[in-house]
Length: 148
Image (tube, rainbow, N blue to C red; front, side, top):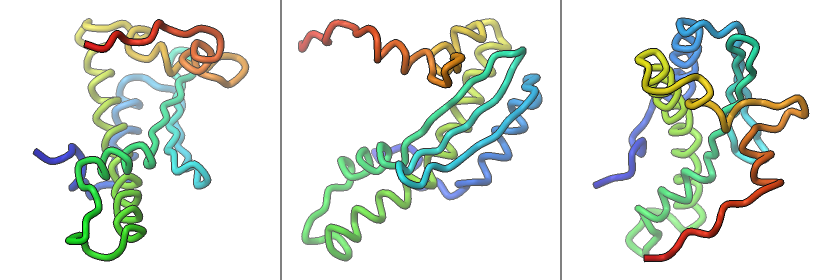
């Protein structure tokens, strides 16, 4: 079985879908930004006075892609070409991943499965422009998972 989104081609077209989903959900503002130095995609929106920031890493996706498709002598090009291919697909996939995630979260809220806070708590922006999840990680930590 392949890695989800490894054949995605919509890329930035998925941003328009995210905007439509959030606008239909009642968001009062929406924007996105690519961080070239970290290869991350940021999506921000405001809903009922709550600011939300979503972040997706193309490098993270590329690392997962490389686990599913490790470089070998049978690969086209050299190792650097192989890694560049992984990052290129990651830069495309993150748009579709965020679109599908937002659609799922909004649907869960609209059907009563989750509250807004339940769906987006970790991504809520605080007054210092950090997310709840970033603040949690900087101040607290969960116990390490127990290996089975």
